[in-house]
Length: 167
Ligand code: C5P
Ligand code: MG
Image (cartoon, rainbow, N blue to C red; front, side):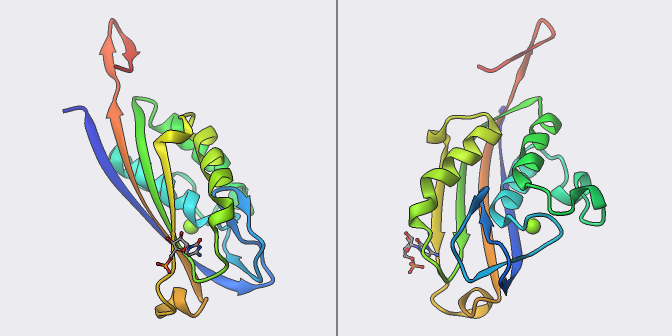
């Protein structure tokens, strides 16, 4: 059994007049995220889903928010660095849900998918992006926050004559 599944979850607080970055894409929005990094809630959840599937702890273990070197960092760089941590695994697919009351995110889907695929070094067809509201309920409903939930399947690379085998 060489396949394993992981889940990633992240929340960021929203505030008027700050940048809203989702999957490396800057969204036209009155509200943005409050965060030590660029506040890319989706990319953070993707990183945790990948690490979870590979049993490699979590995002804060490798990229602590207390470390000044991660201040305002582009989270796609953290995602690329995550691939070095899980070099004995191959990502099979990612299924992502972003929960935001507004604005509508449909027009950004392809660019987000492209950014994540490039950063994960996999084809776009292995990544699905979904957007949801929570019907005006709770902290996403009143624009206090944004959430992302990601499921990742990985496959452990087989050792063959000391080299990785992706079959
Ligand atoms: O949350 P709700 O069921 O109303 O969302 C309906 C559809 O609206 C979603 O399937 C998605 O295509 C789109 N949507 C979006 N941006 C959001 C929330 C939802 O594009 N922020
Ligand atoms: Mg985060």
